[in-house]
Image (cartoon, rainbow, N blue to C red; front, side, top):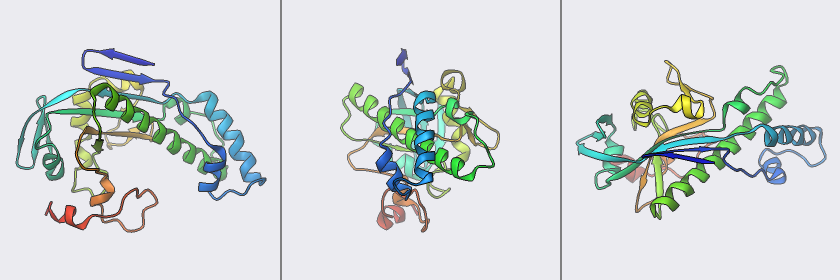
Length: 232
C-alpha cells in the first residue's frame, strides 16, 4: 500500500519473497537437517507477521558549498555527499524498515540458533524492501540509475552517523508513519532499518566502494582506492 501526501510517500506492507532453498544455502544449512526445519518454521512465522515499510520525501538541493550540502534548509556535512550532489537537483531522503512486527516478535532469547536465523531473515526482508523502494522511486520519477548514501555507512568520516538527526528532521514523522525511532545513541529501532538519501547518478555507487574495512560480511562492492583518494 502506498500513501502519498504532497511530497511524502509512505509504503506499507511491502511485498517480499523468501526463497527457502537459496536462503538456506547462503546460511550453509544442510537440506533435511534440524537447522533447516527450524528455518522453515521461522520463515512461516515471518511470512505471516512481516509488514516492511518505507517513507521517502521528494526534496530539492538548495546549495552545495565545499563539504556542505543544504537540502530544503537542512545542512549536511560530507565531502562525498557534496561531491555526489554537486550537479543533482532532486533527492529522496528515506527510511526503510523490516518493521516492528518482526522486531518485537517473541523469540526464546536463549535459543541462539533461532536468534541467528531470525536475524538473517530480517536482513533478507529489509533488503527486499529496499529494492522495492528503489524501483518505486525510479519508476515514479523516470530515473534510470538510483543510488543512495547512508550516514555512518562505511568509514565514519565519509558521512558521520551523527547526521542521522538532520536526516530524520528532513523527512518528518518517521516514527508516526512507519514506527522507526531514532534513539539518543543514534541507533534506529527497529534495528533492521536503513536511512539515507537517494539520488540519480550516472555511475553506480555503494558505500562499500570507499570503506577500508577488510573483513566485512556485508561488503557488496570492491574497494575503490581512486574514489577514496579523491576525498582526501
